[in-house]
Image (cartoon, rainbow, N blue to C red; front, side, top):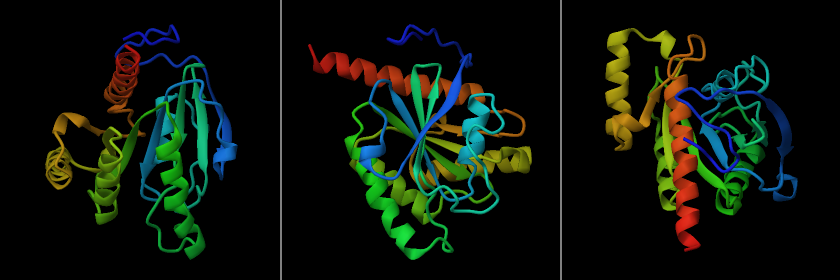
Length: 216
């Protein structure tokens, strides 16, 4: 797979550089739209930051916390001078102040609607819990906006092999998605990392082809 930035992607992308770019609390804080973007969404404490760290082979690029609801802004990370990975604030944690919860949807909605180079969203799900009603709502929200989604089952190392298969089937049935678009993932073992990079590059290539066709 080859993108306009000239970097060749293999089954597992070779991450040569990654850095934190900025935290955004409003549209005015967003970085310039220079590169394709893939965002990460999920419930609080589901493992989004650990997923990003695993993808870029860094331990602490995205800050992790045992306290759910810690990320309350939109964090942008630049990978290989070619891609923005975007960490959206976690949703659904009751102890987050009410005013913060109310701000979440408008903040994220503005981002999803306005970023022209957004290729898709990685929706992270705790494999031990499965999709919650909030996760289903987010999936429907993305469908309404015509934004492609990839679903990632995190914390896979905490399940037995038999439970993994059942959890995968449950996610597919609950969200009405094909199992091939669900990525079983573990930040501890690295399982699923290669498949997730394949899904990310597929989103990027699909968006690039769509833009090319729109200019024909």
